[in-house]
Length: 362
Image 1 (tube, rainbow, N blue to C red):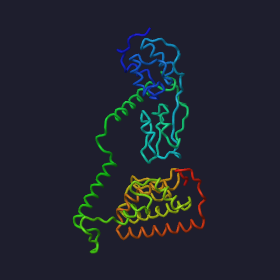
Image 2: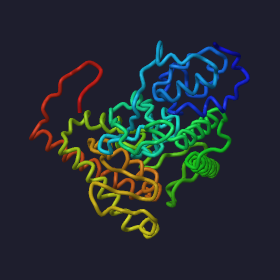
Image 3: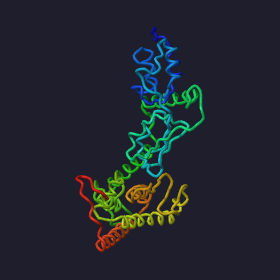
Image 4: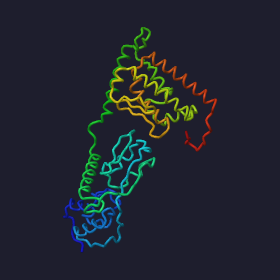
């Protein structure tokens, strides 16, 4: 016979739940399910990962009848997930989906699942746009009180889920390190532009005087803003894809275009003692490269992805170091290189791609 359960400690109910946070019970986690159990608004047979132990424990704790799974869900064996490193694109969509923070990674970088922290909730499968998350059965030793998980594991999962939920509720008061760097750079650029406008000066030559209130962009900025370079600013791999599509460059010519910028970056780093002494420099294994916090590699995808990552490093690190004459020479050399690639394209034109409406294949 059911009794009043509103005085049952919530912690006692949570202790007999497996804390997978899988939402198979119809609630948004184990804590909301426990609150509904205490209020008498949920059945004790709604937790498949908990199996017979959870059902019997809830029946004894809440004074309900153990119906041996009638009207509820069948027991579900524990599963684990792993991310395929060859398919991950670093979109970071699986990170907020994991309720226990078992996935490590950052936007633009390879993600990985901490096997010892994965509860097998499978909530990360749906957000993945490239289907690179693999599911496999749990093959670890038997535990107590659940056959495939221990009470200590459930307790740790509950704490991780609570900490993540609390972080999501409390707004971030401090800006991230990346945002802080970008803010400082923006303030410095605005201060320099204000000084140049006030003095009516840009550059080192005597003929570089410009009327007050006007600020001429550098050669690199003009090339980026006019679309000469398929990276920089808000450009991404989609921009690089569009650039290759506009110039009708096949995979071989795309690689040659990327190699030209890769050699430019490698030469610039080798000639600059400050950049060469920076930790993390690695231009020894083409097409992979790394400089400080800027990584660019293929991830098994096409050259537009590599070009977008490499272009971010070139735009943020190398372009600010170029003089106006060097930037003018770079723009001229880039145009000559692109003209040569177009001439080769005319000799061996790329096969026509099927037109599928607003989407086109590259």
